[in-house]
Amino acid sequence: MRSNSGDDPQSPSSVATQYETLRRAALGEVLPPEARYGLMLFLRRGMWGWARAVTMNNDSASQQPTRSPSLSLTASEESRVLIHAFAAIAMNIQHQGATT
Image 1 (cartoon, rainbow, N blue to C red):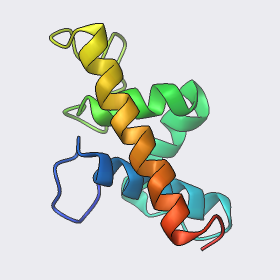
Image 2: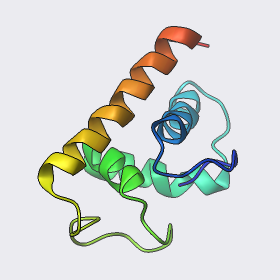
Image 3: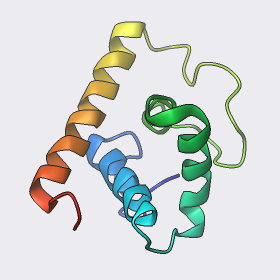
Image 4: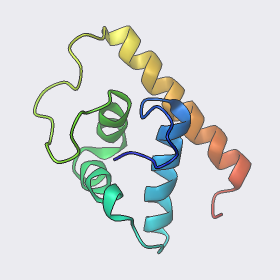
């Protein structure tokens, strides 16, 4: 699931944008076709699994990862990336409001 903004798909702002797309769909807006894989992933693996997949930049939205998204990242690097992504989501919600 990638944003159309042209940003790096691993950037915290891109992750926040993708999360907002899923959040708006949960509130009743139409889910864009390119976001459907992200929704399936979110529902199946939860927010942590979804965030890991999004931040580790899966190469293909059509193939579901069966192992860790990236073997080259250490656990601390992966945690740092995820923390930045979650912080961007939290900051985005504070700026936009919970129901915008």
